[in-house]
Length: 336
Image (cartoon, rainbow, N blue to C red; front, side, top):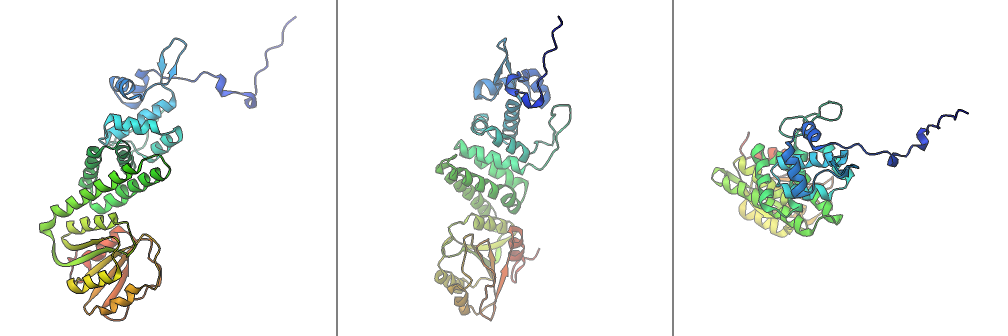
């Protein structure tokens, strides 16, 4: 008697765990990603970024997540991150984080990467990859690589664009990872301290170019974040603008005293923490008897701030570029 054919499982009964995963040999992965096979073998042998599947014949094969990790490692090393630091960063990410980084980071060097089926990926700006490279160096506590990355970014563009596109996002990401317990506080300190050094180096390199009445740069009286002020000083120095850098947490009395002694043409005040609309500083500015432009920046300043009538004017800027344009072209400045 003829036996009925075996029932075919429906899609709802399909169990992907029972189906062998498709793996790829190193030669195929090499052609697919454009990475030399010896390099792939070296990354596997020395750094642990390699195939995770073993066939029944004990041959090692790359699965798709292995390939994703290799792609991300290639992008980091192309940015100058040492292979071990890049591997440490890639292996510390779960599969979701790896995919997120690949989606955010472009292919480097103006080339595209071949994906399954022969289609090609698009080439985008590499800011996201540079951010991840800085994070990888922070994770590895690698100051040499981090300093090289900072300099590389500033060679490619002005300080303003470097700050907005790379430095500020990298600082935020390192801070987020520290708060999540995925990075030590030492990594956060290293990231910010080295950036301070590189920004101050830009100021020193342009010291002979600056001239004219200075611009005072200061944080509000309880503001602790001053890296935005350092970045602004660096970019202003590139534009030939002299600065008097007071840094963070400047009491209003001390600020007004400095203004009266130095009589600058402009003062930039930074606040990232929420401020009150009515503060003693605004009334204390009544002591100013020369034309002074007060420029405020940062998310902490509220709407509706009023300064005493007289020679003081108040200007709010929305972003880094606006701050630079305002301070460069303010009365007594160097118009561009």
